[in-house]
Image (cartoon, rainbow, N blue to C red; front, top):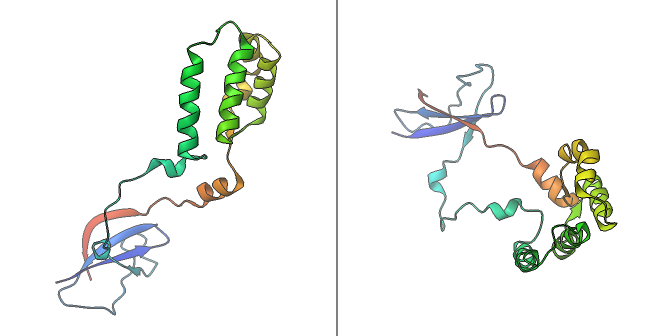
Amino acid sequence: MPIYEFYCDSCHTLFNFFSKNINTNKIPFCPKCKKNKLARQMSSFAFTGKAREADDSEDLPIDENKMEQAMQLMAKQADNINEDDPKQAADLMRKLTDMTGMKLGSGMEEALSRLEKGENPEEIESEMGDLLEGEDPFILSKAKTAQLKSAVRPPAKDETLYDL
């Protein structure tokens, strides 16, 4: 006795339907919104291949190896940095962005330029704090931005077993 999976694009929900016999033709209406015919889905158990763990590195805007190299360099140099010299902190940040290829947002770029000139970090923070808090510090490439925008949240899964 098969269980069929159906998707409602109005509700963005997956539903399971139990059939007493093999029925490949019947298409039910959505049990939630009741106005939309559902679309039959392929069951996930039919997928074969090696299992793969979720990889968060796909969400990074840069190459993971470049980031690791940059972090190792920064860790070495951070031990020798003079905390009272804003130019050294700015130099370290500039090296990070150069090594990884990341671009800074306009507010972060302005703050970094001011640090490079030797301005007091606390003064920069007091003048630009609101701007910096409301801005993403790094700019993603156009391709990465499009990829993130096109990412669709997975459908909801209704755990109820309906009769077909």
